[in-house]
Length: 243
Image (spheres, one colour):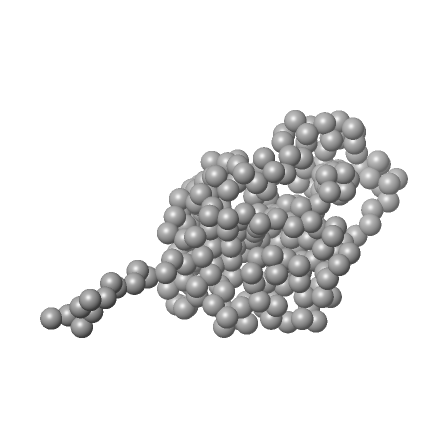
């Protein structure tokens, strides 16, 4: 007779996924650089920030990263994207005793179609998913994103600031609550957490506030409070000349 007679066996606990979705221009690069630097210490605590799909795409700006966009590209079955990130991720997960997976890609908040985001939810259907976002006040975000799109070699918009703001409004980029609902629905998340970028920067600091919101351990306090990335004031004359 079984030794479990009279007892109901406990179901194995589901693993968790913390999905940091951005937004852009809200400290994502600093957060990602911290998590990458602390990868081994996080894993000791049961948090896996995978190597798989984590991209460094700008040789002249090595601290910049789009995060785990390589995984999203692979899940989209983009013919130009190699499938290896998925195999690497599965090997990483199989080789560790993690309880929580942590993925980060700031472009998920606004720049990716919901169908692409839904593929993440399908792939991680066996995980309890928490969506986390860092959000800037809309006018501050518009100003910072406008500078990037004018000066970036990827976009190089020629819109005026007023036209740019109107376009982002029409695209739904400024309705944060609605966007979070759409993302959470697309990945079938169990929870959503958001924090105010400006409040965090003015308070304990962006990275400590993010770690606290996401339920991640602060594995290196000095780095968490000092790390800055991709911060560079731009001359108005330079911006207008580029546009």
